[in-house]
Image 1 (cartoon, rainbow, N blue to C red):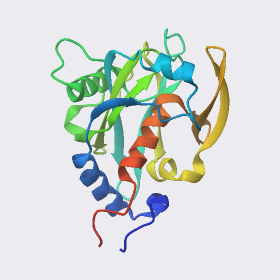
Image 2 (image 1 turned 90 degrees about the vertical axis):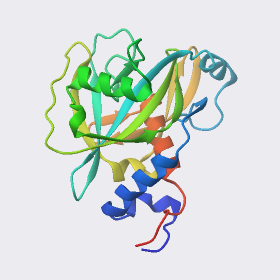
Image 3 (image 1 turned 180 degrees about the vertical axis):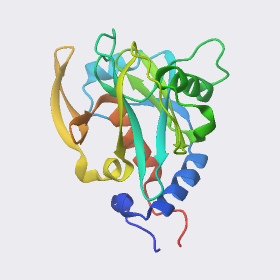
Length: 223
C-alpha cells in the first residue's frame, strides 16, 4: 500500500493500522509539558492557568481490543455518584500509588481493579504524552492492544458500564463535533467524539486526538 494521506488513517487496512500502532507507540516520547488537546481554538488564558496546576500524577489504560477484522477502543462509564467526573466516559485509571513502579504499572493495576481486565490479555504498546485534567491531575495514557477472550468484572463504586467504539470511527476527523460548555464562568468550545448514544469529550477525547496525532503522517512502511 502506498503512503496514506494523514487524514485517511481510518481507511488503512486493519493489519496495517495494527502494525502502525505498534511502530508509532514504540517510538513515542512520553512526558513533557501536559497537553490540553480537547479544546477548539485557543485555550482561554484563565483556563490555561488552571491547567498548569495539574500536579497529581495519574495514569489510564487506553485498551484497543483486537477483534481481528476490527480494532475497537474499550471505554468506561464512570459511576454517577463519584466526586469527580461523575457519569463521564473515560478510560480505566487513577492516581499513582506508592506500590506502583511507574505509570504503566498503575494503569494496569487500575484496569484490573476497576473493570477486572486481566494482565495476561494486555500487550502494552507505549505511552502518549501526558495530559492535564481540570481536576488537577497530570495523566499518562498507556496504550495497549487487548486480546479477545477476556471477561470483565466491574467495580460498581467506580464504573457504571463499558462499551467499545471502533478505532476507525475515533480516528476519522469527520466525527469530531464542536460544543460550547461553561467552565469556571468561561464559555469554552470543546471538541467531542460522538459514537451512537455516547459522547466522548474532555480529556478522554483529548487522549484519542493525541493518539491520532501520534499515528499521523505517512505510514512508516508500505505493503
